[in-house]
Length: 43
Image (cartoon, rainbow, N blue to C red; front, top):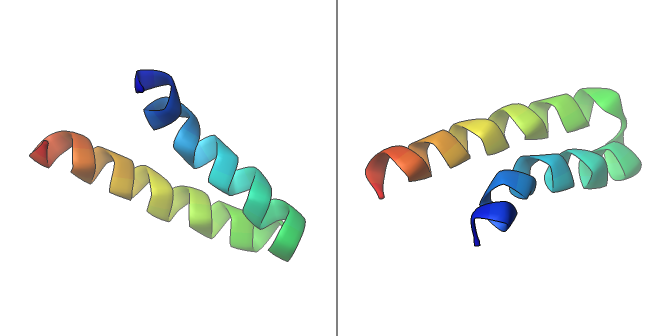
């Protein structure tokens, strides 16, 4: 499960890159990183 937790932002980045380009992917990576940190902080 820890592997999927760490892999989540990278996976979202590449999906967003393929669908929307580098700028969209960068934004998605930022939001995913914040979500991951928030989840780790509260759980």
